[in-house]
Length: 349
Image 1 (cartoon, one colour):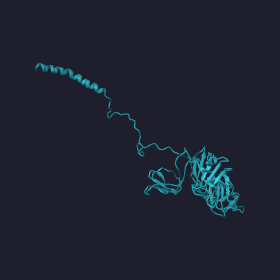
Image 2 (cartoon, rainbow, N blue to C red):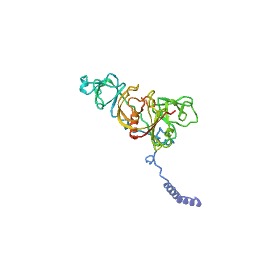
Image 3 (cartoon, rainbow, N blue to C red):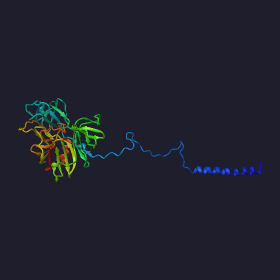
């Protein structure tokens, strides 16, 4: 081997171990990559598959429902289906078919029944009045669970309730969504005007005659200086409460049906009863007898605001002149209103 080749071999023999060591050292300075036998710690954010990523934050709720406890009632209620139904002073008199009995003064009649009693069709039940009546002369009723809403702030749009099951439509009249009675809706601004309909969504309208609508603006009938009052709109059948000049509560009511219509005007609550009997006056054409009507607040003669357990027709005039509220609404209003509270009843449009 020539001398210069021998020198080259010696140089390579010295340098190669140093290069290998240099490569190995460089490799150990890199981040460790987990092998299949190692576990890499990782933070994973769960994704709800039903909510698209990038969904904007929902608009805060502009109203609150009443506490469900306001729907709790003291008695069970029933309509008397037999106009000749006998009421007895005691269970013993009822069981023995005693001649010591009375008839209810008017029909239709609704009675209040003390709780915790057997309701066998061949038995008798005790009424709130202390009298006894046969179960088979009764038809038990289920009071409405409808309730109004508390406003979380002063909204700048119209809102209200669906009065009957109905469907929304698009601009071409094609059905979009099914709405249930008493469902709460708000009006959504739209550049497209659809005659006879209210815009409730992007390209979605509901028939106006199926809705009762209101807003947060104080009624003109209240004048400039009234900041706490009860307002009833006879056209829309909506009651609103104002405190410190702000709308705080709104709900559907039932006012008088002609000829027993509810007169408009300014009134004041002059008396309150947690429960009372309502019996049609002798001089009227109406006839009714109602036991233990809850949360009665009189404001003019025999007329008052009160709860009803015998119908669920809120949003429609059906009363004998009084302003009917659901049991929950009547109880809440009874707690809110004081003697002397201003009641403004407007004819509306």
